[in-house]
Length: 179
Image (cartoon, rainbow, N blue to C red):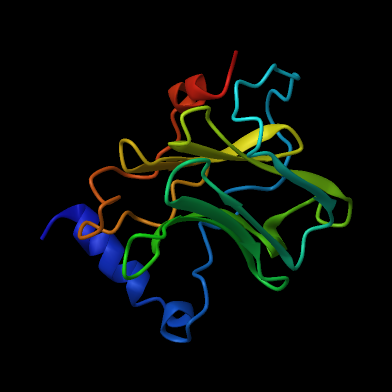
């Protein structure tokens, strides 16, 4: 059994997953939502794809559809435990094809202040990004069937169309969004 398969089975056996709840990510994987370089950059994005809201952490639900494609992304903060970014394909019988852990609410140091949550698509409608306070937290690439996130969690499902790669962050995934 491969390491990736074992990690994914452990993830599925998590007691929270058994209760139908999203799994908690690695402890203290993210402590501040806007860390790192948040220098403003010019974005090269599809003009009709931009979704943004300023909100405190807790009970946030955002969705964006890919321009000209059957894909969508959703950011969901359940208001109690976690924030996840989901990838979907409207042409699939099970539309959610992958998910990326963004944060555990209890691990955040800045949860009581408002944050700018943004989602947008590349011009070709094949890549979607989630930024919080101008800091990229996650990217889905529907062309390569790959997801990237800062926490590298959960383990990729080896049986999924997005299962060939881990969710490990790579700054190169941002090339699709920068001018």
